Amino acid sequence: MAGDIGVLTDLYNALDQQPSSVSVHERLLEVWQGLGEEDMAFEVASALLNIDRKNKAARRYLQSRRPRGSVPAATESRHRPSRRSKQTSYVEDPEFARPLTTQEDWLWAEKKLEEGYTSLKLEAQLLREEIEAVCALGGTPMDDEEAISNLQAIGDGRVSAAVALAPPPSVRELARVIMSTSGKAQELIAEDFEAISRWGASQKPPLGPDGIRERLVKRKTLLEAALPQSMEHLTAAALTQIEREHLQKKYVNTKTMLHDPIEDIPKENFFVSEDNYAWDMEELAQALVSNDGVMRNPMSKEMFSESDIHRILTHPHGQQLKPLQMVQSQLKGGARSKTIDWIQKLGRIMLEDQSVTAAPSRQAMDEFLAYAATLPESEQKTINSLKVPARDSHTGQAFDYTIGESVRDAKANTTCFHKTGDFLSQAAAYLRRQ
Image 1 (cartoon, rainbow, N blue to C red):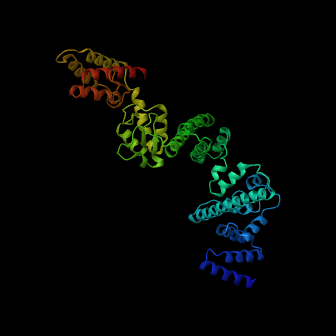
Image 2 (cartoon, rainbow, N blue to C red):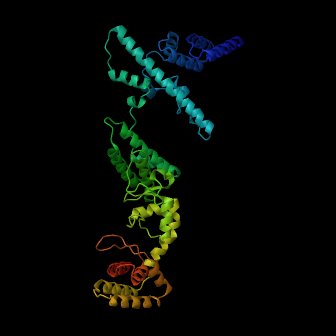
């Protein structure tokens, strides 16, 4: 044994000087075989075959590692593990199933993956050449040209061209996994949608972005039906992530409210509303807070949909908006019928006023403001703080007013009286419905 160690030391010293030496590799292979170190011998034989594709010693050794009558690796693995798979399988070797928690763990796993990938390519090349040689010697035609083509692709490193991606699991199965590990629900859904995207791109012919998105939307709908309603925002967030990262989706805006490119929005802050605006949730939350929690799109001035509001409020940056939403909700019911009658009356007068001086409108505004000053504090808050969802009857543009703001702006001649009357009439109808 001591003599063998000395020989190995000399050989590896020689290999440092001549890394591509065939004779040194052949001698190393011989020594490792003699010591019964099959793993080391396999690595040397694989390296030798990389240097000399037709090397007899390496080919003879690698052939000896495959049992006689064995089927190709892709088929064999379905029935029983080969000797090689026991050394590299993440499933069968507990060492490979250990959690990767440190940088060293990840480097180790990356090295093993690289070694396994190199071995896979070499074995595919060897098997293809063996099949071709046997057919040539026997003068028999190849029965399966596709198998040869697949082995060629694997040997060239184009594994995905030969091995089709497994179809995604059923929605019911996925839902069971998500419910059993709810702490990783977001990650599991995103991984599933990413797998759907890769699977669609691997089809023949491959699905385009629109086809993949259609599959993802169907998957999302079915998954939402199988999961609790409280998890709907997770499926929406996963779809948004895949559309952004894999489908190159285009949005209405190209920059955030602070004029940063939407490509620079951090993954954890990225949000897309149903009207296809992309947001940095931190910016959006700040904008909504400054608008008293009114769920209005700061760019389009349209109200967010109910689904968008739910997703905004469940986002970590949206948590601060919940108290403001409660305040707005309480304000909706904070006006008595008499006050609503005053608002409706003022709106009608301002809409019908066609006088040159607008005296009827000005008098009605003074009377309304005098009346509002006598109201209890809760009603005054409703008039001055409740943002009423309404839009201009002529242009369709959304109003961004409270009742008090609209009257004060009209009194200061900063807005059209007829527009204010339009808004107040809609505000009175809105308050009556609450």
